[in-house]
Length: 391
Image (tube, rainbow, N blue to C red):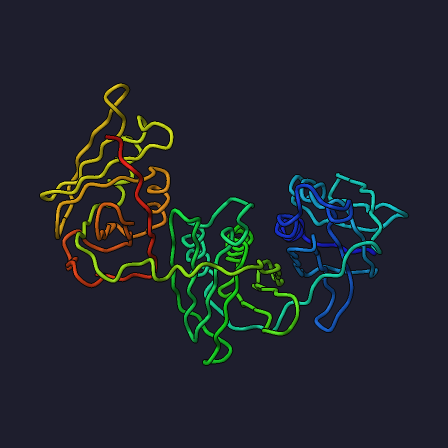
């Protein structure tokens, strides 16, 4: 194996591929990055791959290949080396049991791993459709806000992707909050209906890493095709980036019905102002205690702390329609939802103090925010359970 490639192209592809390497691999070869140099129908090229039996990553890039071959080396070490190289062409070759890497006057030698022990990468399923990479990344970033992080409840560590015609719906919950995000895409067939439970961390990392091209392809294994796999493919650096991951087993809870169809109180507040106020007031909130929110007469009053310790209170303008209400929430969960909303104003819709709030983004503070049926349904909704207030 011998090839020459531009330093920036190689460093970017290696970093992208190595990001999925396991921290504690179950076998030494799974810490490796597979380098394959060869000539195909599209001309000379290079393929870099990683796989840990759960998630795979593969990047193809242009390179001047003089000798075909393949080698397996430490992925993280290769990424560190490529990141530190001078801005000159990189020549890579195999010398015995080592891979030699030369860039200008810098030269490195890496011990190879037994490539024959490396697992075969899974085949990416046929494409189910395409979506704007930027829109998908933004949608995923919002959806994963409510995903669980407790590995004892693996189903809740995933995001449920529902594909229905030209719409994608993402749902995530950790039992205390729920996020729902909808976006449009271009399905391969208009009658497509499918669902997948994707690990939230993998989905978030993948969506963020595939924003180099205008669109990404989503590929979902069909029912009855064996092991559940979802694949994502996009272009970057003159090549193609592909990721596959195994779907989570288990049934995601039926959470859509948790969003109420009617509200008795609807309030609108400037998003950035509310975020800053919650951050200040929550400084005195005791561990696991709530930040109180009282809506009355066009004012939102935030309170935290107790009389025996530090206390904080702050009031800000709010457009309130309906009955006065006082409730409280986990301050970090509240901030997570607020920060996931990109709009200048946030709408908080309540049925009663002991029931969850539904948060969404709006363009103005005094638009039509009537009670009754849910107002201003947006692409992103965040439902948050209240916390018991200290008496």
